[in-house]
Length: 274
Image (cartoon, rainbow, N blue to C red; front, side, top):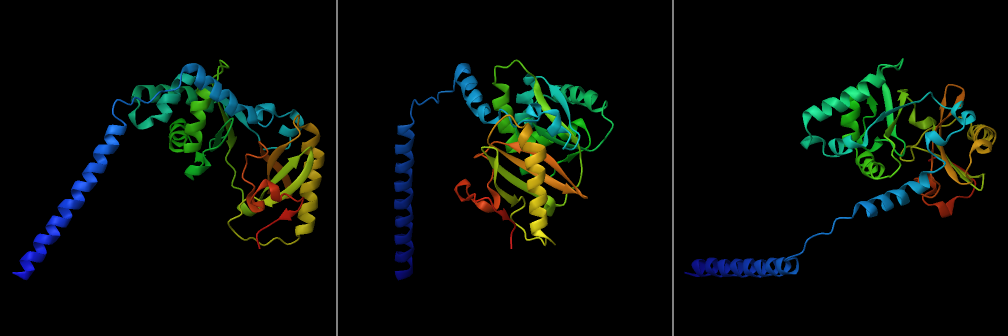
């Protein structure tokens, strides 16, 4: 009898908890009853895209002078119409015929290049959050763009810029770069405010840190700063063999501060993880 009574009590308690939970759901439903989310207008989306793009002015590959381009790995531009942005963003739901059409547009441009393994990025950011960044054909490029939150987000902004331009893809020959040989340099008012190991999650051994720091400073001060049209920017560089090359430039204050942890901590030092 006692066991049956205990089971009955547990049943009552569970029913009471279920009723309370259902009441809460009903109350939440009433709050949203008749609510229709307001989508931004075309004008609002264009305005948002303009604001998003402002910090990029002066740091994209298209802004580089030839003196800076000469210090980099070769890169090319290929283009596709903005009408295909939705097909990339909603890739799994897209019409296969439209994806094939986009594949043909990109593929024809790739055939004109004299290399066949590609590193790609938008004019703004790369799809590095996806992990695999080496592509070999147009289909892989489309799938990579569609798989990255960085590039899908940026594509939506680029689509709504009222510049009349197609979407620009930056294409480079894919080159393996040792993570230990990549560095980020912070420049404010055309002065170096700090240099950090780019891959700040891992510890690497550097034979002569002082010599390395001096070489990077010399490269940035002589080869990059004089030819940048803006005062504040972030430079990503790599050492390949005995040569320093520039990988890309980014907005100051918006790029990862790496080992400095915040821009307030920039003190002009050279930081590697110990």
